[in-house]
Length: 295
Picture 1: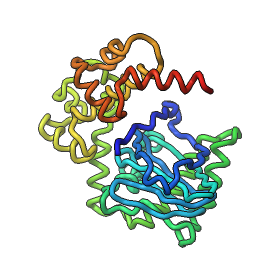
Picture 2: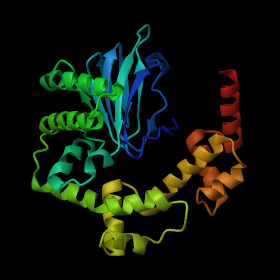
Picture 3: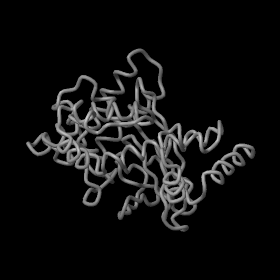
């Protein structure tokens, strides 16, 4: 089954959001179409029951259960028939906690640097950690919806408390191996920030490696190790998502959207689009237009 990118942009100045979400896909129809995104996600089931699917994994869930999803692993939820299933989702980019952070402070992010295959994404709501997390997530939800002074500071503080509980639960105790992995990830951040800002233009891997004070070969190895894809695959993914956004906007031709996103070979984009979306870019945009007119 084809997957898709969940295109939700967080505010660059404060990359955090809380979403109210009703699950509509039913387990009786089989696994839903899985998606991925560029942010970290915490999900709390507040009502109903169903199954949460990750790549090669499926978890039954009920109200109170909590899930983690990072920026690499595809996932999706389905509800049991005749259930009104609801989630609170908390979304954030690493930058929310990384600005000015030391390696020790950045260890809060370790729960989301997991290896997909052997990782259990579900935390039972009736377990000790689930009971500890639920009031923290409830407070985080209230602050996300509120407007009181210091709201952003409070959200960061509550999120750190949640992540500290998760670090304890997963026994991420700041060991030498964990610290080394996080140090490598932080070392890549200048390059990732530069790529994110300039991916529509020509990129020189050697020059970008120099931003991290790394040789090109070391940068190439570290990038694949931490991002679980090559440098070129990462850039192509960003260009694909930008072209997709431009096509969805309806402004200009599809060819213009592809070129302005940084693709020098339109054929490679068209092939990738049909693999990801199952239709041509023209048919996809027409479908979006029909849906908008029906609303």
